[in-house]
Image (cartoon, rainbow, N blue to C red; front, top):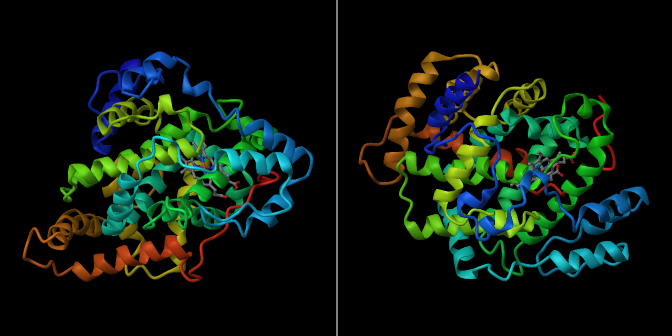
Length: 402
Ligand code: HEM
């Protein structure tokens, strides 16, 4: 059994490009061996770290009925340099004043480069985050179960739009500047996660399927980071998209700051892409598996495309997901095969990249199909297909009913 799951983890990891170290099937180990800054010294296992600064505060906000007021008041709190709205509970405002800033080690030049990189590469990033990371999240069982059973799970389209607000704000030029929005978005997300840690354990549905008593540990957040940042990093390299070292470093740095703002202690944040890939092979690849909740979420997410004309069929979309992730994940999620589209994606997508990157003078005759596809996807995630405004993040006050 041990060998089987180890072999499965290896083959899955190879397919996802997220393997390459010994012990891929090992349990979460202290990140001391992954190159985190002070990991070796810190010792504490991030699986047992949640958010000491925010969690107790949110218990008190929820139990004292302050959340609806907070949600109303903070709707107007958007830019990093916006003053905190009046009327927030004093303890809540004091907390935000404390955390709503960049860490001392943030390097503004790198963050500016990351934003520029995100803009230059947005086509691939939306594709990879949307169809790669987004669908991968549905086979990360803890994430799928908590997302499904939290209040937001009842409206996946709205939730997906909110989650993409995170990626969108992170990708904006000046995201980390005073006039950017990312620091605020990250802090709102951190608060939402803290609320979920209090609420989900009260859900009988979640308790019946969860393998943990409190969701969203620091380790879980790192897993999700790997399904986003580390996965995208690897794919860009595998697809041979020009990715100079300075861009790689800047992209990592923006994620390091993002994870810090989500409350993960610095000593557990990978310091290099090599360390991140090593950690991903240990903590992400071996845990990927389908669940009832994940299958439903994937169907919801892929069904989002019914709202907008992506210029492609659902069969093409299924095959694109299989191409970006792998067939094992596609089979888990029951994505129906479309072999003609599969052949098209596997030959035409690399040709599309080569042409787009100026690495081949030959424009594939499918260029416009792919071009419309990636543009429409970006639109879908940014605008929910139409409205053009980002969806505000709100703190839940309950769970999904059933
Ligand atoms: C909410 C991003 C990690 C579970 C959110 C929201 C964002 C977000 C932007 C707010 C959207 C909304 O209001 O619905 C992220 C990022 C992560 C991360 C960037 C890591 C890099 C995780 C993990 C879990 C998780 C590890 C669970 C294992 C949830 C849940 C909600 C949420 C349950 C609340 C949905 C609701 O309103 O009911 N997250 N998240 N997140 N996240 Fe995360």
